Length: 175
Image (cartoon, rainbow, N blue to C red; front, side, top):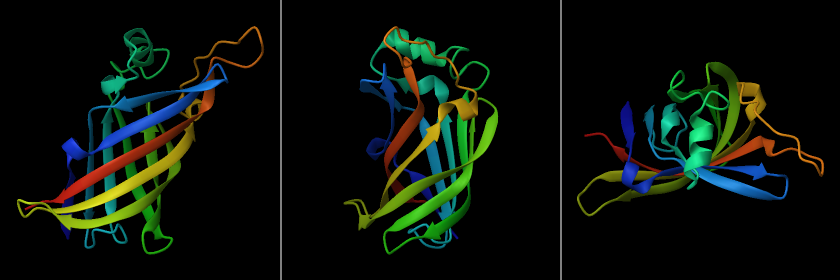
């Protein structure tokens, strides 16, 4: 069994949520770990574990970031991690997989599905074996206790319930 560790310098985890129902706000988690344990780098027989530090959220707006870290959203002081543990991986075709697992946010665990696209394998100039993936999915934030919102005068709400995730990640085979 091989272990693939996240290459943090070549990986990013982003999210997008509708704001005031007219545009989207994007953000990132800057501190996260992903480990893939399996006999093949293409996920077909792998176990995927993800740990995201909630305090590392950034939307390039400090007051909003502090609000997201507060008790009204992630409550980062009480719930410092978001975790995902795969329960099943289904091969859709040569390069696409359905990644099923348990996502835990703010102490609430729900089964969640993500799509993973295998980008391929490469060897870097230093001889390290690398694998790349693009991962996407969406959740309803209220399912995880992220319920803060504000009604708008014109109808609708300040923040949509749906949050979309997108990650471009690169892994290096552990030596």
